[in-house]
Length: 76
Image (cartoon, rainbow, N blue to C red; front, top):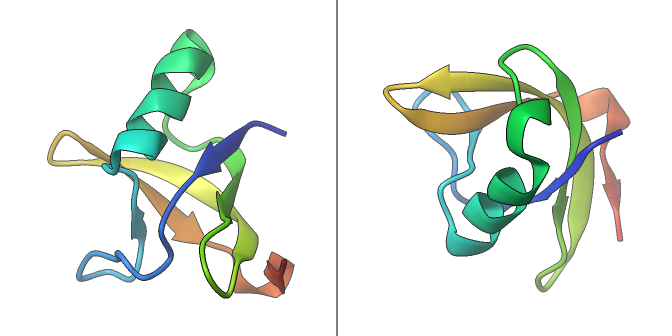
């Protein structure tokens, strides 16, 4: 499963993780053409109180977002 670093504290009005941080953008750029709307990815927040969860990628207003599948989440 593709992995993208993200900040679970940075969510949009629909509760999706916004993948517009520098590290998120770096990961997305490295993954290149593998990044597509609707695919399942693992979003990892390795900051204080780390957390990870599987998410569905969505493109919203030119910004990649991750719809969290909460049942897959776990603390790191």
